[in-house]
Length: 334
Ligand code: BYC
Image 1 (cartoon, protein in one colour):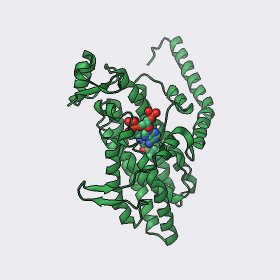
Image 2 (cartoon, protein in one colour; image 1 turned 90 degrees about the vertical axis):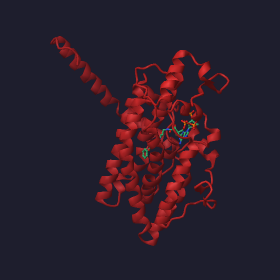
Image 3 (cartoon, helix red, strand yellow; image 1 turned 30 degrees about the horizontal axis):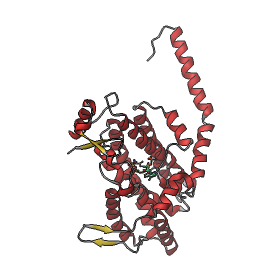
Image 4 (tube, helix red, strand yellow; image 1 turned 30 degrees about the vertical axis):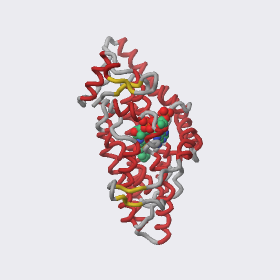
């Protein structure tokens, strides 16, 4: 089952015979479905892949607060405001669980944030698109959180213990996020003609960027083969994209909205929809930093980091003072 595993210099996966005894034992544990815990031996590539993926995931949760946070003050009712506020706070919590999970791999939160701010680490492409009106907040919950859950449900089974446990908790909250988005869409789609037009416009703009969230097509995915061999990823990008389309098309039909794809058609043989691929050149352009909102998002995050410096300094000063008082009083550190 796990005949091909760790990547060799020639860019193929190593067979079990080619592995060191430690690598082989590790791979056998993965094969048995065991979880890998922070202090256990792991290949350096496994550790680096986790830092990249979980770190990117954490950054996505934090940057992902920006497009929705923008609408908290303009939510149409007090109830919608309270719900959106809770959702955006949840995203902050998800970022914190995930940063904690990455920290178990020997990299600090400050280092991760420095890499985000300098452009060395990515965050999800989707958050580089603007939220232009209230219907977009519905589309984000319905499609963006819907796509996120499709990906995250399989990540609950990921082989790294802290990531898997963070995902279990996050998935529960994401389901609520998806439902609140669909609820907004229902209100708009079943509202007056102008509201329905806004809902359609939001779906039309968010459809392809949502499909891009799953990453490039399998033939262009650099990391999938190794990540699946290590059970960091359980499904390929295309498998999850297909599941998302199959789940979402009936939901759009119920709303009376049209998915902006002339090639969308049920395929009896494969038991799923045929659909058009997103424009991959747009995707690669966005992740290279040239999407509609990349600069705005990064400026907002860097500003938040710089504006928070006094508070972090205050916390450190307080911690140091408390530690020295305790030391003077002969009280052991906690
Ligand atoms: N955006 O080899 P591949 C949320 C990069 S937030 C940007 O297939 P992999 C929410 C990829 O990093 C939920 N970059 O990569 C929050 C790689 O470049 P590098 C976010 C992308 O890792 C607030 C290159 O393309 N979810 O729910 O095997 C409000 C080749 O790709 C993207 C996660 O982060 C992208 N979409 O597979 C509302 C899930 N796709 O790093 C909602 C965790 C690919 O070599 N992550 N790239 O320079 C994953 O599952 C995987 O990392 C991916 C990509 C499926 C995304």
